[in-house]
Image (cartoon, rainbow, N blue to C red; front, side, top):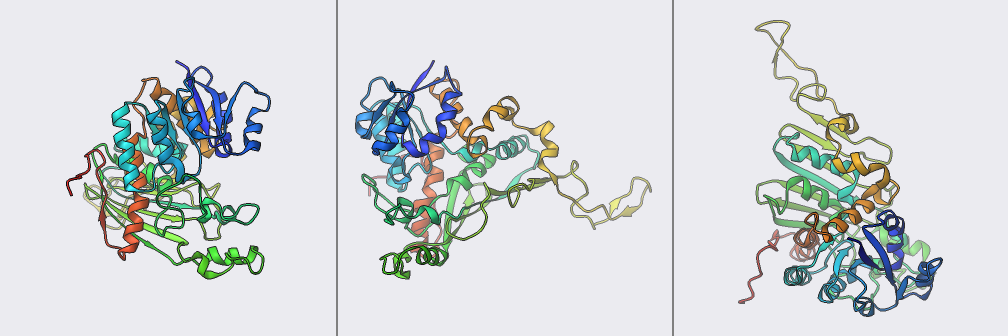
Length: 422
């Protein structure tokens, strides 16, 4: 089965052009959609047969398109996904899936009604490191899981302005056709890169669920300092008051139904070097921490496998002195890659070399690969609509948390229809 796919959002979508070419026989690129004449022309270079649409509504009416990959600005994802599903198209949506709880429920209801395939393209879940840790967690290597951390820290201030110094959607600017919360809303505005891998490690929506959450935010300081340094004198955004609805850093705490705790941080304004992801995982039999910067190995310590014992000063039986007790050697981290021979995820064993040529540490390749398999009926979507809206809902809930001065709020179980009696 070859899926005839359209890409909506020519700029971000272009990052998948190489991936689509590597999935010949599974996916055929047949159309692109972007409001920019220049972007559409660039897609048509060397392939005049590729259909190019300026309006999303026209794209989804094309009967020769089976599926749509939505790679447009974040604020458009939910409404465009709903439009495509209602037009009979399978949907692969970039992150986040939705910006309000109303959009979350609408996505669930529409997927259930249409029976079409919906998957969220959370590529961080497919990075080699994340998939290996997931494999270890599912095999019980870390013991019972109790705590996890995730952080998305990426200085994106250079993406706040267009070339004419108007605001982009990341800078709180308007997007035609967008509804719901915006990036200028004070909350955790981009939770899924951090939360997605953790949710899979903990089996969220597959034995456990997110129960309640709270978020605290810092003031906005680095954002306006940078804006004032690059904008011309007298520009209306070169004042502190222009950025009061933003935050530099947001910290979210989530408690699960089984009593685990997740800590997330999102910061897209503070100046510092960028690395792909910061994660940690704690269990009763060991722990994992990601590298702190590009080039540093991720680390693991597994009781009975890694060097040393924890705690080390209790007094352990010395096998060389029967009946004697002695302090054990201190626990020492080892490179996660030392354990790859045993715990590398099967995807990376089989397809890792091909995936590494794609973006986001191989994640872009596997996102598209799994979507093709899901549409073909070979697998259920690994990041289905319930995962997509559960992870994405943290944005909307975090905004309300901040408005209520940190009051914890319940995370809906989107597998249960909402009570509309009130």
